[in-house]
Length: 167
Image (cartoon, rainbow, N blue to C red; front, side, top):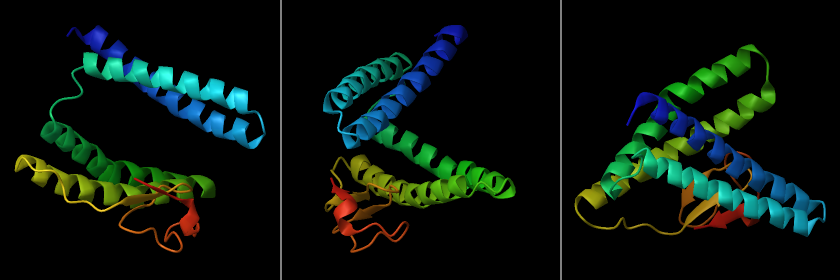
């Protein structure tokens, strides 16, 4: 693939991915404000943006077989844990941006769990087996991820067990 096309697809993938997430957040806000049809509009647009992002990722060759996908996921999570979030947290601390520090420290803690889960999954996939995995619960407030039952209280943000989504 020519560099300009690759660069353009990468930028489009990033933009569509961000729009997807932004519209989901907008939908949640509209729902809370009692505007269900506007929320539905945002969710529909979010889904369309997700489809665009997925098509761009495939065109970039950014998705492969499960073992390679897990390797890519591990690489991304490890970068976030070892380099990205520590640097971002340090910068936010210097600039005294407390909300940013809290947000990024919580993400950093969750990314560590994700990296470990992906490493276990990769070992299983390399053996051509599925991973033995109980239910996964994710805190809807901060993203903390836990195997098995949801804790009574999120260890990162203190949210109650009712705020955990089961996968």
